[in-house]
Image (tube, rainbow, N blue to C red; front, top):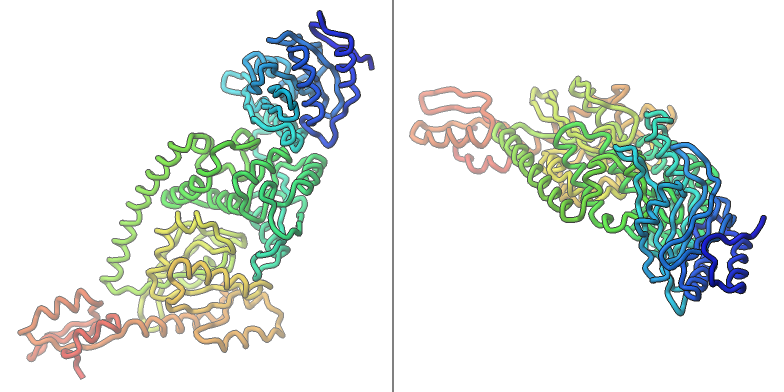
Length: 605
């Protein structure tokens, strides 16, 4: 192809023109936005002639055209690009600013929109060391209500940092967004194709192998609605502070993402804001960590006003440190996993408004907490015992509640099927009644934002008289799951409460399994099947026994001269029977065992 130099060449030496022609021989590899070599050479020429230099590059990395302008602008050569409102031109423009300022000008933005460039890159020339030049780049990111293209700018970044940006994925994502917004694609949100990334390194959780944790991440991704295309596991002595799994591995994944048309990359660990931003820039697709994925599932599951408030609080607390420079995440425009919950307007506001929103939500949750406290106080006054179901997610807690109380709350074989707490009346064999509460399931490395945000809900666990720890004994990692639950209970200050260990799903075990017999020998434990109805009567008996240890029934004879004691007994417990005799009032009362000593002198023997 002819090595033509476009634009204003008046007064430019032939040696400079020959240097510009050599730009045609450069080829960008691995889908780079720009190379440090090309950027430095363009800056060198710009500093020498004090004029802008522009290079036009195809998505394959081929230099299509080179142009020169005056110190204010550059004449754009005709570039043959693709057509269609949902397609970009397939060409990006890289140009220099002689004044050293890398920020895109109004002319740059207009050229980006009018030519539908894949990107407009501006390099602020830094002399004498041109390798220290910085750049910013802008991309079309959507179509607004007036059917005009919207643009976002990113940077500044050094030339070396820009080399790590895997650009084709970004352009492909923009075109998918434009395709959706222009109406040429189905309005229905398609299934997002995702890859999962885990890392095995020193100091990892010893209870779970990296492979096991990655498999659980797949279940979480399936629950969120993603199609998991591939799982990747990286081994390192420690996480890379900039790219977590290392720059080389990120670039390797970037190629895979482009080849397989991946929409989403999910990491099995919590990423720092800087790591997430760097990986997004290098890979060109949305990046989520384990915490963001769990928060998204919670956002899908929340049904009650309280649940939605608590999810929003957790998401805002997670988002706050990530507001400064959201990198290349175009998720707010395209929607999908990791973008639900607070919504676009709340996630894009500045830090001050987010803090105001957090304060408002905490106030609302505080009011709900007060109502819950009143309900608990009412139950305590009536001396109604409370039992809370706790356990790993998908252990069968909701199914057990449905079976024991003849209810029909939502229960499915999926992670976090239950989010909003459900309370039902439980009838025990000794004619006693209790309140049974189903709570949100726990998971290993439960995000601390969720524990904090769901404090009012989790208080039901802290205040319960007895906890039923439901364990899916058919799961190969049931011991590790149980340990994760105990860790969360410890964080809540509920580990020392009376706990009945309920080994569920024994119907899924092999018929010749000796595990149920061995587990049943453990103190205060029982093996059941909530779905098949196996051993549930024995479970109810065990619950009644544990509640009786916490409350007793006594008969008290109160002389008429001490009628105030009758009122105190009504307040302290539940009066089952009351009879007036010649010597005083005879009451049969159920109350806490530790309260009996207060009325010991009135006990009728």
